[in-house]
Length: 218
Image 1 (spheres, rainbow, N blue to C red):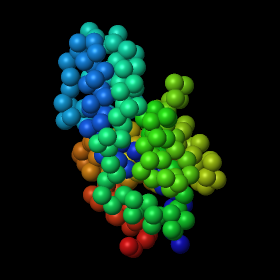
Image 2 (cartoon, rainbow, N blue to C red; image 1 turned 90 degrees about the horizontal axis):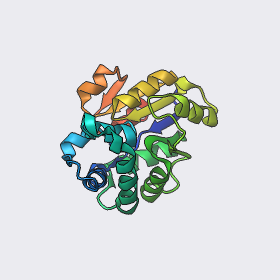
Image 3 (tube, rainbow, N blue to C red; image 1 turned 90 degrees about the vertical axis):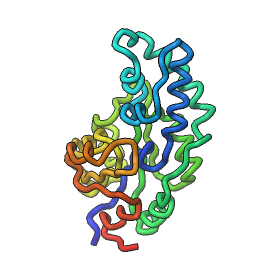
């Protein structure tokens, strides 16, 4: 019998390829204040720890006072364009369907703003996830375990019965802090080396490999 009862997924770089829309919105925000834009490759290394931290990384040390203003403009732009180029990674919808068929509880835990997280998840995966948890102005972001532990509590299962799946060190650190199993995915924004350095329990290269983690053979 499979010991894992729930899967908690990151969003950007795990379920959906959203980097192009994110980059467009970030660069729009930077441009409004005459700040230098960033390339997609640069932003790949910055995204994942919440909007304020990402913007801070994109700004020069002497331009940190622009964080809140850039964030406001970025949110305005992203609310209009978050679905333009974003799409699920190949194989993700099928894997989610198989997990749901096997009665695995499904949740999303992301450092993306709650409103945007809800919009994207419900657009691409309508009705698939029981819980969609993004951030608000008062929420701590991953790797703080608070939100992850609350999802586990809401599912009424134990941390060791839960698998966290994500593409960034923050996802692996969150799983560790919750006492859960961590799966790093190497198709996202961060490298397999970073995931290994953060001691991911396993790293997968294709979505359907996740079925093996749960003991299911496709």
